[in-house]
Length: 66
Image (cartoon, rainbow, N blue to C red; front, side):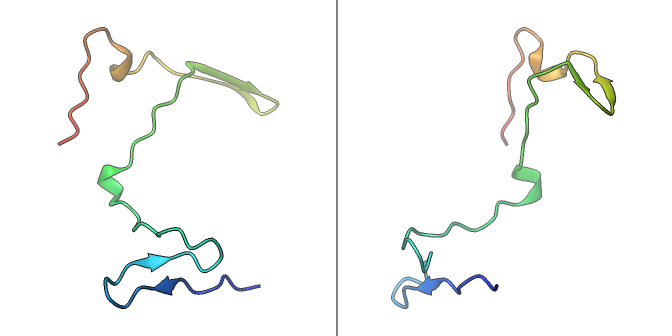
């Protein structure tokens, strides 16, 4: 099944969801995407995955969002 095409406001060019009519926002650029994991260790049936404490967890760390 194919997703329905978004509705377009021809006056503004804004795209809207054709099912719920909420405005659709463009995908951010990859350099603006961030993920902060909140675990030092994951254990699954595939094994244990562990890492050092990340830089962003250090006391006094400031996020440079530039």
